[in-house]
Length: 64
Image (cartoon, rainbow, N blue to C red; front, side):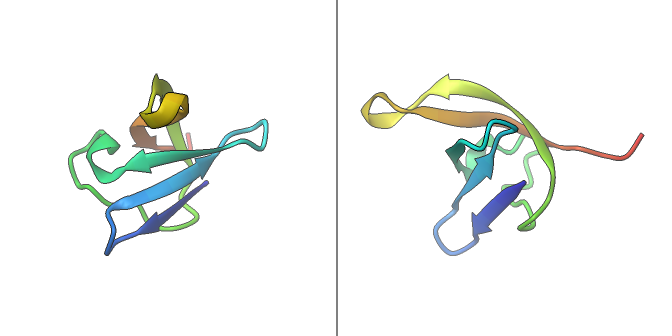
């Protein structure tokens, strides 16, 4: 699930393990630069600032 702050252009996602990861709006894969809060997403890990991991390549998870 994602949280997102439109004004700042960043948000967080919580993985299945409960860890929260930062992401920037440019990490949204479809180019929309926005994700509605509470939206389930799929993402990849990437090295981020200050030696912490960040979420990247965020994609919306759709019901199959």
